[in-house]
Amino acid sequence: MARPTRAQRAAIAQRRADAVELQLAGVDWLTIGRKLAADPTINSDRIAYPQGYGAELYAKGKESPDDAALIRYACKDVQLSLQERHTELGVSVDELRALHHMRLERLFFVAFRRAVKDGDLPAIDRAVRILERDARLLGIDEPTRTELSGPDEGPITVETVTAGELAQLIAATEGEAS
Image (cartoon, rainbow, N blue to C red):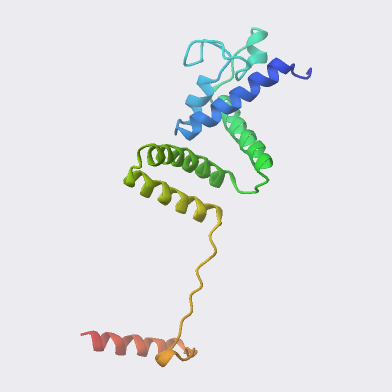
């Protein structure tokens, strides 16, 4: 198979970007596959998508990919696109985290524009909440240190008990609750 031309590479990059956009919008894999198919008879828009799924088959007049293949192509496009974004960002996070991060960025942009443009206090609150959620997702915030102490701020005593002793403690506690 020959190396794709510059125009074909650009069309493939656009197809992958479109696949990610559709996935971000919550579109199911088969619908993405059909929307980005090269063959107009299976393409949901009834057009020949440039460098769409099955483009080589369509160009040779062969049978179009089945639904399972369309789903595989769509999944692969989103996976490759996310891997490229990881490389660009220098971040090694799993795909689900990256997907949620991109969704939060999109939501933040809307809230941020409204907050800055109109000084809308609920939009400011929403933008801050989105930032907080994104920071937790990406592990940016330092974990909160929690210390436990016993009576009078002293150490906690840990004791081992047998199963029988534990049963007696539970029974005694249940008796106190009655």
